[in-house]
Image: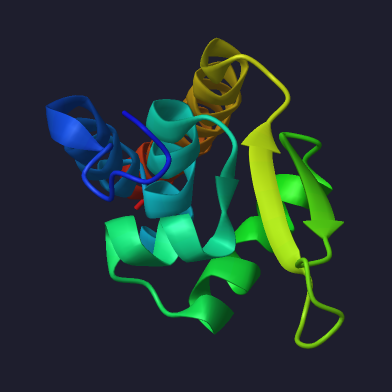
Length: 127
């Protein structure tokens, strides 16, 4: 699980991706979360290499994670003054907190579905 090793995702990472996508988490977001869980602090390029995502996809996927307060993003200038700074990302909350957030969202969605079904039953009984 070294940063230079592009296969740091491993079986756990791919399982995280699959499970998150099963919860309707967007693919790029699921991949980015798995990368950060398995790889620790990573550059955008590390995530691109490990996941096959393109740079704009990584940036777009990180936006909602940053907005939720789950990640820290920092930029670091390369040794030369040329080019863009390197972006580093890392989770700043335990993975359990992320899981709980998705759990709450899924439970809320299920409750809304149950309520809709109950209303439909009432309507069908009133015919």
